[in-house]
Length: 241
Length: 219
Image (tube, rainbow over all chains, first blue to last red; front, side, top):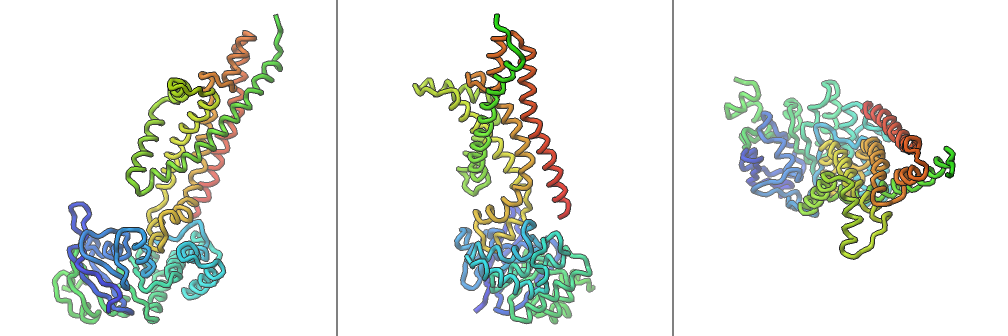
């Protein structure tokens, strides 16, 4: 059974239909790269999956939790799927450790010592065990993004949504974040990532989704999608002629 | 005719200043609490509560404080409830302060980046949890300078309550003038006392602004 089931999802912003019937099934442990031009709807799709955007038609479920617009269903869904953002979105008034502890304590009611132990473990996992007491402003972009990953992992989600997580980083910081993601993939975490890192997509992902004008234009294994694109649009997008 | 020394005048004014200070404090604290409720209604998800809050804020911001004082004092009197001046003054000032503080604070909450709401939501927090642990702690820091700045308006606003007969600093000024026939001296002193109350507040608002801005620039 698929872990994430996206069925005929449609989304409009006013009169502009940005998702025109998207269906994707994601199996547990799959790593999926979503590529496409800006405006093709890839970020919107990702944001629909954990309910940051409402959908107008179709359905989304993650491990049996349906996407419904009320707070109880949203919470159940969001406990199963974490999200990492382009702009990190760490809480600036809390230390790295506190950032990772907060939602455990507030949402899961985990006792403080236990939350702290988990936070230390997760920060260690992303290679930042010494930064527990550092505030976000004291960290580099790459480090902030790794804290954000640790924060999402601390909720033990079944899948992670990564929304262009290296796009706001200086080039030399991209590798450290991708290394963490690569490790997560190797450990069997289910990942859906909107990315511009084609090499990474080719090396790590099990499937690649090419979106174009609100539709899934091509989908397949990276070796097929990248080596033998079937459509003109994908060929153009990849810079092949 | 009785001679009044400067000290006589000043002493009486200072005694009345206690009431100005007390009324300011009550208005500010009470207004802060009501303002907080208004803020939650104003930025909440419930349409009805939001509209109610908007209506309230617009009504109180769009009418003179003096009219609000009159309505609180004479309005209830019309329906047979005898309202003492201090109660009318306190109530009107609390409601007036609340409208302004709610609006100041709304600006602060809305200045927090949308990503903070999204990140906390995606971690499973409910709206109240987001407010309490993520948004308000950050908004509070931004809110301190304008809030302290507004407290100056509250202090000066209390002067209007003299018109419904509440004996605070301004009212004491007219009473003392009537007894001494020294309006320039008396009102000069009244102004000085208001200045002594308000200036430290504006100054501390400026200092806080500078301090918190410096902290902000480091982000």
